Image (cartoon, one colour):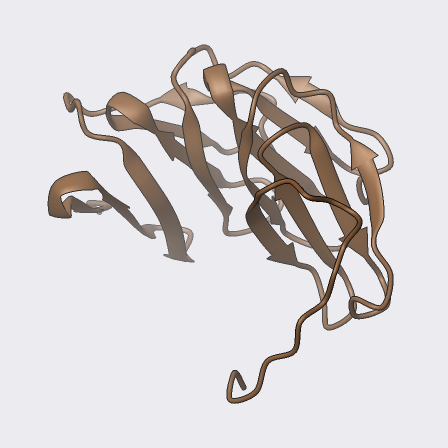
Length: 164
């Protein structure tokens, strides 16, 4: 429950920027370049894979063992449906840095980033709808409670909640 922690090591010397757990044994970690590291044995070993993003990637989220999304520089969004073996780009329609992404299920998600960027998908990222707010502040984090309730946090104490 977080009372005790142990170090685990990878073969990378990059900065890790995001982590997502699918179950007790499966975790995915992204770095500030083009790599994702995956363990399926509770961290005993990690497999490295390049994912094809052109700049730093900032966050990863897996909704289950197979379906994952990574966000990064220049509005890049990439997705896997096979546990990270293959990745494909999705069009976000923007060029702002995306800093976080959260999905409540495999279809419904929100990505946030610089310049008040808020992107929403209801079809697993096939399309992303820009819901950005008039803001020069970056939004750094997003989390869902349920399909209708999400919170976004950002610079200068920004806290934004969905309206029903």
